[in-house]
Length: 278
Image 1 (tube, one colour):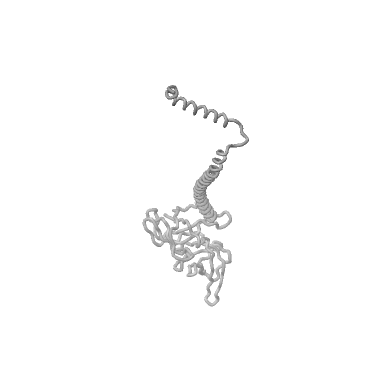
Image 2: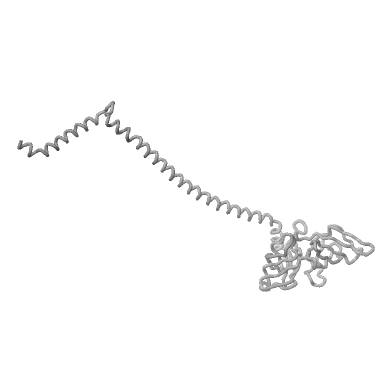
């Protein structure tokens, strides 16, 4: 009895250890069946495990979806920026293509002219479809004076580029000038027919048509004749191309011969101009 009392705790520990070793040995063997406790525990925990797995998968899918949304948003922003860039480049190309003839004429004129020219950009115009009165971005600071002739490069014949008259400077500031073109109803210019040297006067009109008359009723003029400034009166520079004759009419009673002109310059499209100085 003394022995049991003395070593009771140790014997209990040894007994428990022996039971655990037996249980470990039994459970480590391959078994065809499981115990009732194991079955009960498995049935109890299986739905919980499935629920946890389902919740984990849903959570993973949810956060993956959020990540996909942010990725898609970022990609869309990049695509929108790229589209804006392409649209801007496309607009620039269309703008250049639309000005191809104009830019070529300007370049060729700069190569061939002997006049002293200053280039200006159109920055404003009066209401309407035509550039009968407009403003350019050069003025007295650039050497521009009131009354100076304003021109543009034009192709008179194939591969022949000359100065085409637009109008004249009527008002000038430090860094701007106002121009009145030939088609303005208050404008007029003396001309000569380059083929025959017959002269006359052209004027603008309210509907922006350029028409005029010849001094000599019997002057030899035909459709297609080219007109240049005569320089009479000193209003415009001499020998600047005006345009060609498209219509001719005569009046025996009034002894007049009138003509309608197709201007060399397109007065619906003006971007840059040249001003003749000195």
